[in-house]
Length: 152
Image (cartoon, rainbow, N blue to C red; front, top):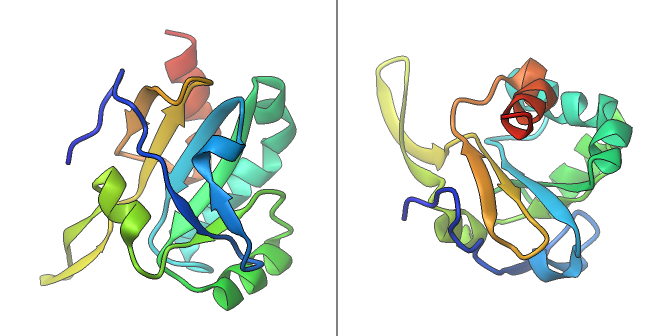
């Protein structure tokens, strides 16, 4: 499934880092739903910390930030504590949210092919329509990428 501008964001219910059910519909404003491969790896940490460092500005722009990866709640809890992340992380261990957004698939690394998360950021409006999709995420400048898209 290739989601793009103007498409309806798929609704979901999944567990966050604390084991609480979280859904897209519980966030009434705009959302940054970002998918990342793995907690506490260099690129994923840079991505999460960029959102953390710019969290107040993103909130001022009307956005809630929600991270999604295939790691479990325990992994997410450690990641949040280690880097003081102020937003929820979805533990999508059954990959339902990944599949709904079309971000799980074949990847290549050092000549090896495997299935994994394609790092992708979705900007979603108040009516759950996709504003834009970032597939070439600059992990250390993800907020700048979002602001550049919004200023177009």
